[in-house]
Structures are given as structure tokens and as C-alpha cells.
Amino acid sequence: MAISVFDLFSIGIGPSSSHTVGPMRAARMFLESLGDARPEVTRVEAELFGSLGATGHGHGSDKAVRLGLPGYRPEDVPLDAVPSYDFELDLTMHRRKSLPEHPNGMTFRAYGEKLLAERTYYSVGGGFVRGETAIVEDSTELPYPFSTGADLLAHCGETGLPVSEVMLRNELSWRTAEEIRAGLLRIWDVMAECVRNGCEHDGVLPGGLKVPRRAKAWRDKLLAEDSEGDSLLAMDWVSLYALAVNEENAAGGRVVTAPTNGAAGIIPAVLHYYRRFVQGDDDGVVRFLLTAGAIGVILKTTGSISGAEVGCQGEVGSACAMAAAGLTEVLGGSPRQVENAAEIGVEHHLGLTCDPVGGLVQIPCIERNAVGASKAIHAARIAMRGDGSHVVTLDKAIKTMRDTGADMKVKYKETARGGLAVNVIEC
Image (cartoon, rainbow, N blue to C red):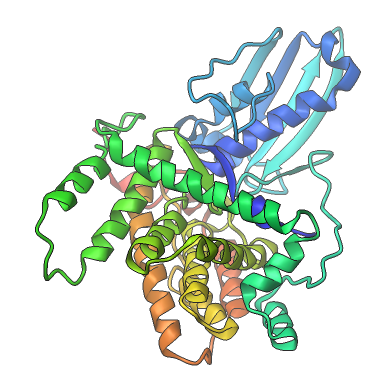
């Protein structure tokens, strides 16, 4: 399966790529699959299983299904859209029932005078949807196909190309160089806009936990402080950038899935660090995102970016690895240093559970992105101090992440039935 950088970085709405973006896409796909039978539909049944049923209300899965059925898309749905359709909708969320292929399962049925169609889809992380007819795997032949870190390093070694250039040459199989550059800078613009929006809003996040938005107050305080002599000031800004994005995500704002919504603040925060504190330019942003995308392809193909499948190690851990790799590339790192940075990002998130309090993408998710962004910068700096040689390869770290996720109890995988989710008293 060929995966593009634009599959990994897509524009959507919060609070969750697997719980909001994926179900919206699946619902839209279902109605489109009806074709000429669409006018006959008088009633639709939608059943959400596993993690979608357990935490779907807090993640907006019910609203996402309602928006997808009349045809809205995550990338351009109005944030204040009110769904309307000409059929009855029965929506059931099963809190303790799962489908066999993936924790995030959905079944849709359309009725007229009889059952017209039944489809099952799976939201497998990052907004990706799979099902009976939901998605045809891209069989595009790439000049430099890779699914592992070893494959990627082999291409770099044989050609002398950096990671970003290998990824670019693969992307040229779908788009022109001008389209790729424009598309990636558009992704960066949306990331930057999300940070600005997050820094302009205050108040309390929705959902009942009464979590205050902090980014605006932080920004105002940082701007007012006399920071001369504070050698760690940059890290305060990095934390702010991540908080701003993830508060916007928690509020249902427009974000870039990178590679998921729950981990959407890490790559924008590190990119802001690059632009502001490393004096980076647009060319560097493009190279950063291409490199991060290459690592994302490996994680998506051989690991997982789904919190419901492997816990938060697959979300924040993956985003940290991608950001660390991108930063290492634009700092002048070699392909082996890039791979080393990504491995550090994965390794030091192994075993991280997904235990959202109240089923909301707020605690611990928002602060976890700030910490993950800092880890990505440290991972890049550690890798840059070495020559790329290290004992644990990226591939071994990813395999360990997937094995750990398989061993992890379901209550720690985005069901809000374990960890902080049951040890924090809701007020």
C-alpha cells in the first residue's frame, strides 16, 4: 500500500481523528455507496462499537456520524454546521461490544421498504478508514518503496539522497513538485492558524470537566516577561504552541491530523520552534514535513498510530518520532541521524497508555503534547550529537510498540475505563 504525506497530514476538525474524522468519512462513504438507491432511504441505523462506543460522546463521534451522512467532509465542514437529512436516524453506541477486526468499528444500515444496504467500516487511526468497500489500497508503483526504517536507509545509502528527497521523489508519483510544495505549505499555514486561534481564546473547554484554556494567558505572560538570561525560554514557547493546538482540538476547532488529532500539537510546536528559534524558512518546512511523513509511513505500515489499538504510544509516540526526524533533517542531520532521532521518539514513549479522563481529549492529552514536543527536540539534539550509530533500531522500537500494544489491557486503550480516567474524580 502506497501512503502519501498528504494521507498522514490532513485537515480536519477536533477532537479526534479516529473518533471524529474517521466516522464522518465513513458515514459519508456509506451514503455515497448507495448510489441510485439513495432516494429510497427512509431510515438509517448506525452502530458504533469498541472505543467509538465507549468514548464516542466525549470525542464527538455521534456528531461526526450525523455530519457525515448529509455529505460533510472533515476538511471543509463549517465548524457550526447543523446536520439535516431527509431520513430517520437511529444511532446506537455500544460501550462494551467490539467488532473483530479493530476496536473502532462502525456498522451502517439503510432501509426503505426493505434493507437496502449494510456496511461495516473501521476507523484505524489518523482519520484512515477501512471497510468492505470503503477504501481501495493505493497500488501506485513508487520509485523508492519502503515500509521499514531499514528500507528507507538503504535507499538513502544507495542514492546519496536525504530522507526528504527520497520521500519527495515518491510523492512525485501523484503530484508535481509545485503541487507538493504548495500543499505542504498549506498544511503549515493551517497549523500556524490553529496556534494563533488557540492563543486568542480563553474560557473553559466543553465536555463537563471544566478544564480552563491556558494558551492565551501563557502567551500574554510570556510576551510581558523580561526574559533576558532565561536559557529555557524557547521551551516555554514550545509548550505554549502545543497547548494552543490541542486546546483548539479539544474545543472542536480546525486542526491538522499529524498523524492524529490527539497528538496534533507536537509537529506544529516543533515546526514553530524551527521557524522562530532556528530561523528556518519555507524550504525547511517542506523538507521537515516530507521527512516526518516518511517516518509516519513506516509507523503506519509496520506499527500503529491508533490509540484504541496500541494506546497513546501510537499517537504521541508516533508524532514525537516524526517531529524529531523532521527537525534533525532541517538541522543538517544525516539519514542515520534522522532514523536515530525517530527511534528515540518511539522508544521513550513505549508503554504509554491512552486513558482520557471523562472520555475527553483533554486530560492528559493536552499537556502530553507539550511534553512530547519537548521530547522531540531533545531527541533531535541527542541524535545530532552522535553519528547515527545506536543499538535499538527504529524498526525494533516500532515492533516493540506494536507488541506492547497487543499486550496492553483494553481498559488502557482509549476506553476511559482505566488509568487516570478512573482515578480522577470528576467534579
